Image (cartoon, rainbow, N blue to C red; front, side):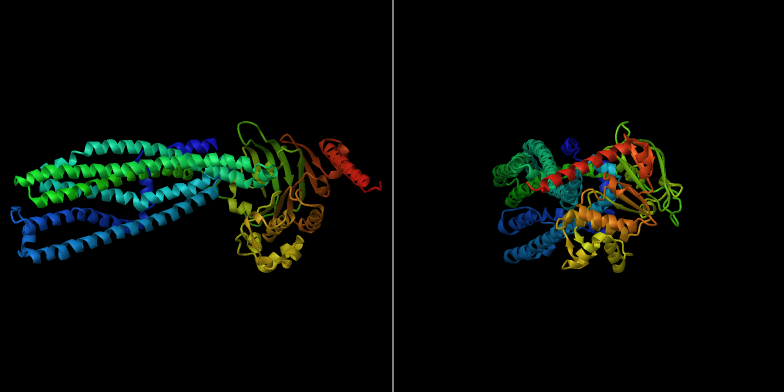
Length: 621
């Protein structure tokens, strides 16, 4: 979580050419719409300079008989000399159409870029999710869920702001500003310089605003990261939280985190609340300067009254793009920071991938061999070391040992959730690294201690998107694991809705559905990792009854704590501190009186003690 917070603090540069080039690549499929939006915003920028000039023309030509300003030849030919007719022509033929065209151009570019922004968000989220699915399981051990959710939600939303209202709008603001400056200098350079005289004050206000908003934005990002991480952890652990009566304490902790977010946003609101009025005041100051000095110049005949009025309007329009550019600066800076984090995730290498020239996987037999395999999750602490054993086709092999002996690690390596670091793992005599991941994993059905169900229906959780599983095959799988009667008793039967993580089902029912899911895919190899340790004795009896039929003809790897469940295994591999210590059948290992014997004796004594306690409680007093 700490790494997550530090990563959110990084804001980066306001503009990074390397990142911008990568971002522009996402616009390429929509280049035509983007081009139209760019043309629209450029025309909009040009038209921003037109209304004040038309007002100057109207005043100087028709309302001020003393004005000596020259009308451009093209307009002089078009406009009538009659004041009434000329005013109507300026208002209805020039001013009104230009205003309508300005509205249409602004609407068009805004709609087009919002559309492009949404499509880019769609594409980027698809790419991010597809990449996450290809990363090894170890990546998710190192990265909190809250961080990854933030990448696909908040960070992508920030980039949407860049595409929808930032990138093209920045160009439009710059072009509008340039158009206004050119027209002002062309009309009267002295009044233009008077208007520009407040720019140093604007620069100071803008720098203070950027600095303040930068700090508040950094704090907002950190607060959002903390809220995401806190919510993910405490919602997931809600059962434990309620069990230990920590609701009040957790509420107080969340209130602190939430308050940090609120305070950061309040500072940001304060910054915006001060900046925009400050720029407006400076704009009024510029207009006051023009009104005073320009009015004096008009009285002496140095400028026309229309020119002075036009410059008052230009002064107001001149500062709007400056306001927008200051705001877009923050959008751009936030987008660069989000892009840095998103591309860091996308650039995370896929360490477990298909080989360049995969070996064929036709007619799998299901033979598995661990050959001097070694692995460490971190540093040099080996979880398993020099592990060697073989599972022949159709054989049931059980792996037992104390907690932390490396049993589950064997299944993770076998399915290439993690990559073996020493030795080899062979499937049908082929190194699993030489097989496509799809070809390897489609031969395995796996049932874990903690079954996972997705939101959907009973049928969708059994099929998991595999279209080749028919209704009859699904029913047969459910019947073989003794859960068909339960499913048929539900109102919707196989179409009965399943809520998140199977919240409406018992642990035993979810476990049986996991068995039905594995068997419906008809795997060549069945892997059971503590699959019966979390169910009640009645459900365990149902599963054991089903397993007697299901394991026949299949290669099976069974990891178990309850030794009573694996006594009929073809052979038992005893793990201790990452090493294979014993291999043999149940009876052979008992005769050796080694680690397995001690484990069995310990469980047997526990069962005897439990049985004795039950008898004592049931005895009459």
